[in-house]
Image (cartoon, rainbow, N blue to C red):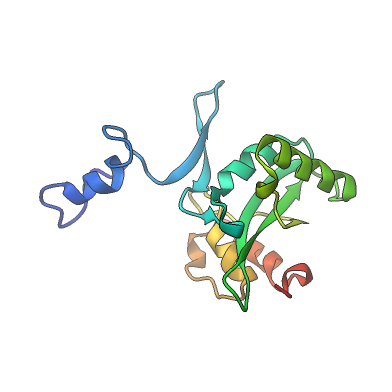
Length: 180
């Protein structure tokens, strides 16, 4: 946790940034999950990466909380894809599966059903695809915004901050995402 901001003599910017959402409690803008057995924390990603398909706003962590409980799934990343010629967006879910599993129709149905039953039909991603790797920062955060940029054809900067920057290549020129 940072202890102060430069050029913030009275500490007001610091207080606003970290203590305005929950007075007296530090809030850093990331979703995390506490392991009840160990007390450790798993960083799930930025809470500001809001998805907004058809005007329904929710965070990717809501999707992660469901799909990461499915035994075939090792990891996932959930991002928005904007229409190229419009203002709509749809949700894309990439799944990294445990060895020996494939994203077949049965697993797709299982993922969609779990999300629909535990969240809502509006939370079900428009496209669900299998991937071999999920990009992370060196500090262990999923890099949703970089995946979003790659699928939109936007160059990603600051690759030195990534633990596995080569994984971004997996998200380029995916046929299922080209005509949106």
